[in-house]
Image (cartoon, rainbow, N blue to C red):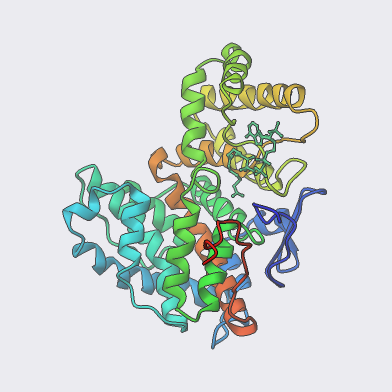
Length: 362
Ligand code: CMC
């Protein structure tokens, strides 16, 4: 029995393949670096959902339908009460999504793709005492998210960077949240229920909750010279270095390089805090050196969350919202897996081994 179910095959999927030895991610037959180059959120969403819904569609149609769906779900913000808005952003987002109708149909899926993109910027604005900004149906989803967050039209490089992020994290094999989505789908509870379960799994620090702590770590380290000793002391205390290590990858997470690449146009146009970028590079190098020295038997490398932290901070998201942005991108993967499970799967119902006491003999 393996406590973490590592190496257990629990589903067949046509959606994505994570090759942990080669450091390769394939989404529906396309390698990650091809998808990210000029890829858009709507493009990868259409690719992932293709053939899994009751109607077919393409990137262009999806862009229009999603824009309309964003406008529709914005009404739910008006009904959001103060107690809900006092929650951490990802919890407030989850509570708002829980108010959406459940079902297996295309409109439910569209609303679920649009809702996190609308709810997260609105919650963040309300929490800092600002009015939420209504969606602009003429914009693609990535640009509209940034506009709803800041009130300004994003630059071309900012939109491209968010698109690259959303594409990069759209799907990733049978990770914990995707497995949760498939378990719920196997009971035929509905797509909203699947997304809620998945979002609950995502927020843990061992899964999608790591990038906020990555920034905390960069802040605590402060200077490049302090990186090596600070990281050594953290390991001495038995802490894990956030943004490093992975259950599947034994080499560098290819998504880390995709995001590092997505930052380049922002760096070359002066849109990244250069001191922050240099500190991140120094911390990455120090962490890799120290992890290799301290854990020679376990190949540990940088994972997706390390450069997520830098990218999302650069785009203006506060660190407490990073898990919510992850959810905006990953919802399409959860939906695609839920549909795949519902169409082809059986009820997921594994067994456990009882190791408790037996009743006393009469
Ligand atoms: N820092 C220090 N040591 C680590 C780390 C780390 N980040 N990750 C693993 N190790 C060590 C661990 O202490 C153990 O050492 P030992 O054998 O001496 O006890 C060894 O590596 C194996 O650890 P494990 O717990 O069996 O590994 P796992 O497959 O359960 O861990 C992980 C995967 C992601 C939970 C872990 O690497 C971790 O906690 N990383 C930090 C949090 C993080 O960055 N999470 C985001 C993951 S990527 C997003 C996603 O795809 O969901």
